[in-house]
Length: 261
Image (cartoon, rainbow, N blue to C red; front, side, top):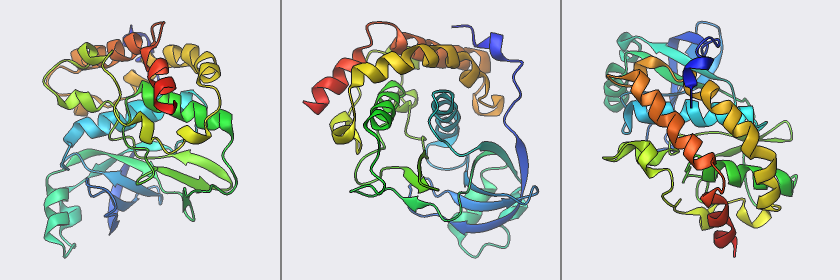
C-alpha cells in the first residue's frame, strides 16, 4: 500500500488553543473542551494522556477512513497547545496533563446541543447505516462502541461517530500492527448497533472498495509528530495492516456473522 502517493493532500487544519474551558471526565483519557484562535470549540485529546500519541493516531486514521466511507465524523484538527495554557487551572491533574502535552494535540469539532445515542433510538437508526458502522468498527478493530459507551451522538437528526482512540488497539502491543491484521476482534457481540444492523454482506459490498481506496489518504493525514522515531515505517505498518484486513476474503465479516448469531 503506497500511502506516499497521497502525501500531497492538504493536512489537517491547525488551530492554536487560547483557553481551556472544561474537563470532560467521561473517558479515561481526560479530554478537555478547548477554545481556539479561530473562535471554534474543540473536544481535545492530549498527547500526554494515558495511551499517548497512539490514541491520537487512531483518532485520525479511523476518523478519516469513516469520513471517506460517508459516515459522519466531526472535523478533526490539530490543536497547538502551549504549556502555559494550564497555569490558570485549579485542578493539578489538568495542569500536569497540559504541561505534558506541548505542541500538536488532537481536536474534534464540538457539536453544540448534540445528544448522546440511547436505545430505543429516536429517530430509529437505518439498518444499512447500522451495518456500515459495525463493518467499519470491525475493520479498524474499534472495541469501544458498546451499550455502556456507544460513542455516537445525535445532532440535527443524524448519527455522528466520535472517539476512535480505542481503534487499532493492538498498536500498543509488542508486535508490528500489520502482524496482527488477521487476529480476531474482541467484543463484536457487544456492539451497540449489531442487533439493528442490516445484512453485513451488503455493507461489505458497499464499503470494501472505497475503504481500500481511502487507506493511503487516511494514513497520509496522520501528523508526523505522533508517529515516533521513524514516521515512514509507522505509516507503512498502518497501511499494511488495513490492506491485509481488506484483502478478500475478509475474515472480520465472518466474525461479525458469528457474533450476531
